[in-house]
Structure formats: C-alpha cells, structure tokens
Image (cartoon, rainbow, N blue to C red):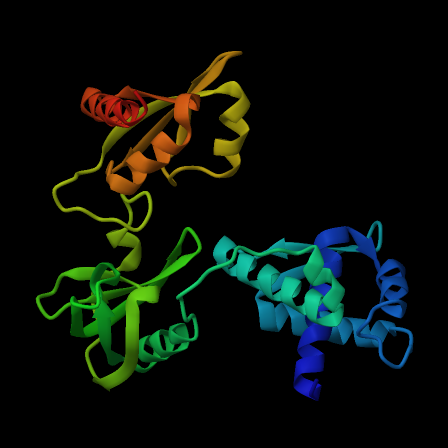
Length: 299
C-alpha cells in the first residue's frame, strides 16, 4: 500500500472507530490503535497525530467529529448537507478497508452479489457532468441483442435504486430517460454542451423508485400495515412523503403522496398480507386484480 493509500486507510479506521463505538475517549481510540492491523510499526497514537487525523477526516469526508468537553469523548455528527447515501458509500469503503486489512473477514462480510454492471462507467458519467460534456452510449434494450441503439444525451445524474445504478439523461427531444448501467455496452464523453436544465430531484419527486410514467399522476395513497411491520416502514420509509395517520395496537395507517407506478405496486405486493391499500379505490382494485391473477397460477 502506498503512502496515500495508507493515509486514507488510517482515516477510514478512525472514522469507523468513532462511528461504531462513539462517544469514545482518546484513550480508548489509542488503545484500539495499538492492536490495529494498520499499526505496522506498533507505535502508540499521539494526541497530536489524532488531532491531525481528526481534521483530515472532517475535511475529506465532510463530517464533524465533535468533542464533549464534559466527558472528553468524541462522536460523529453528520452535517446537514451530508446525504445518507453519501454516508452509506463511506461505510461501504470502510467495510472494504476492513476486509483488505484482514482477508479472513471476507468469510463473514457478504455484500450482495451483482452481475453485468460495470460501475467503473460511473466515473465517465460523473466526469461528463462535471466537465459539461455530452455522453455517447450504446444501449441494449431489455437485454435483447437485436435492440441495440446509439444515444447522445445530456447527462443529468447517476441514480441508484435497489442496488442498481442508472444513468439519467436528457434525450435530443428534451425528454428524460433512465439507462440501467448493466445494459450500457459502451460509454464515452463527447463535446462540450450547455448542461441539462432538468433537475433530478424534481424528476423523481413523486416516484417510488426509478420508474416515471407520464400517464400516472401523483395522488394521495393510504395504506395500513400490521403493527409488527410498522417499525420496518418507520426506519425505511416507502417515500419521503410518508406520514403516520393513525395507530392502533394491531396496525398503523400511513399516508403517501406519489405516483403508483409499476415498481410501487410490486413493492406493495412483495409484503403480502402485511399491507392493505385503503385508498384510492382505483389502486385498491388494481392490487386486487393482481392478486387474482397470481392466485390463478396456483389453482
């Protein structure tokens, strides 16, 4: 590991120690460093080195390491502009660093296996957005080799949903289109362009996931979930608009404002009888018809 890589690994280690054990004292951090696989020379961690690393972690990762002067302990606090998705990526890097430091840990840490998705293409997407360049890509529709098509797009964003990456781009006709990364066969940066004026947050404001259908409008949706499932939906809301309407000993009613597209309907069905759609009646009827279709397969 070169010096730059070693420094980054040390910063990740410090972040992970405080994030997992905090509030934690400097003495506890120093004691853990003595036994760390990264401590190649066995030297103790000085308070000066700790403070230097602390500032570097804050600058590099965009987080705060706060010190409680009353207890002389340190803890992580997330800045308002630090998105949860960014924190998840940082934690992913920490896990990778942990496995690299101790390869045997790969027996116990099992990330979801994906195939066909070359995430290195994301760097091309990010660079094109940063440099204000168009993207030229060869795209295979529905994995069908007879449906390959060239596109020249204005890149808007890279968006992840259900552990799958998508390139969000503006087509020549001004419409936005989602390109699953695993169906992009080739990708190159093109000429300098005027960046797209489409906003990714506005595009997906009423979407559950990645699907947007112009014919499906956002509406108020009321669902009832069993009480034993309620904490799951509290910790992982279906949508940013989710609110608790009422609660009993048996169930919790939730209100959402979104477009009931295909992926949202599939999400509801995936929870089986744990979820009941109360309103609107049109969505309730649609869910009922899907259940009848499924039932026919097993009768």
